Image (cartoon, rainbow, N blue to C red; front, side):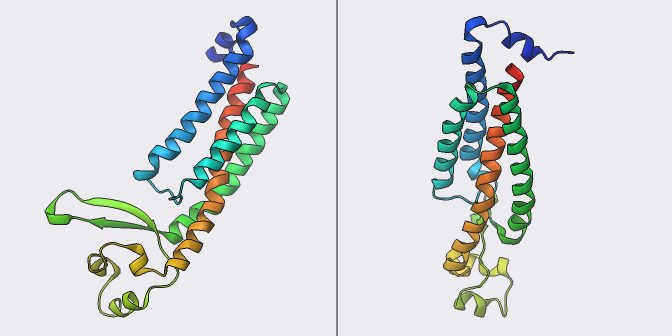
Length: 187
């Protein structure tokens, strides 16, 4: 049984390679755009945009090469990229559980605002003193919900770098796996 997509892409004649590359580019672009736009609503360790730029550069460099490669190589790239995604996910998820912290505030009884931050391994001196009598949730308003006022900024930066070290391969691998699989399906 053939997939509908394969049947359609085989009808483009001399433009088949261009259509395959365009389809893979749309899939890859969708993954990159969802990564960039999803940052405000979900967990995302990268605040600087450098990781996103690296992802776009790698994907943009590999896609044209996949467009002229044989199908077996596209399948190999998809399998290897999927293995990278799985490995990175198994490394990344425990780090998110360890270093991620969801802040929550209800200013003036308005709608509750929630966002994720990278927490540090050590508290600031002031926060450590305050935590002897209050909980972390209780001292957040006192420090203006500023993570660097609660956790040591150097410690937070190191944890963010560790998270990005596994986040980038997961996103890049996923994007390349989807693109390579789409191109391999097109023949």
